[in-house]
Length: 217
Image 1 (cartoon, rainbow, N blue to C red):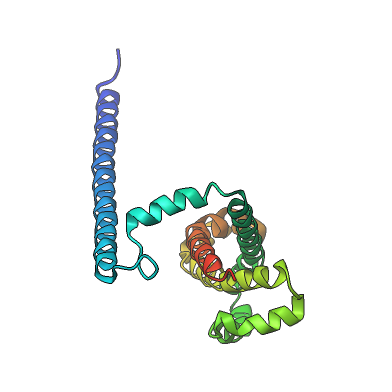
Image 2: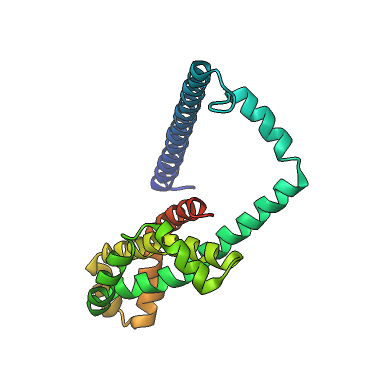
């Protein structure tokens, strides 16, 4: 015979799961509704602006833009150039990750490294990205080099800063608990620092991808 306590726990967990699914479903529908309203608002303002200018050169209508877009994406030359640009963005983003994540871990964990690198990073990230264009052409010549450098340069700073924030926001209780159970530095890094700071790293990566697309020249 099944114990009453087990039945109670089963029904409570089932009710909790159903309630969670209902709440998440309602939240997803509301979020979808908000997005549709936002899209409709943007298209409405766009159409009003197109009606105001009466010029397809200055402000084409949404319908005209969509029709032209469907014809453009069928052009093999446009698709080829789009793939080249996508390759550059992904390459620059990977370089930014390879530099930004280890440096962010180091600066977040070590106060000495933070004091050494923080003034340099704060100084470099204030320089407008376009100011580096002449230097990158001199350093790398014409081709993919300057573009990849600018994409990586623009993306490395949000990755570093968010990784540092993720590491520094970890509660000291986790470190103390791990050390009390005999965990070494590498075990703490692999099982505490990396998982706990991963959400901030993903946020930094998301910002870096957006900045990478803005840095394409």
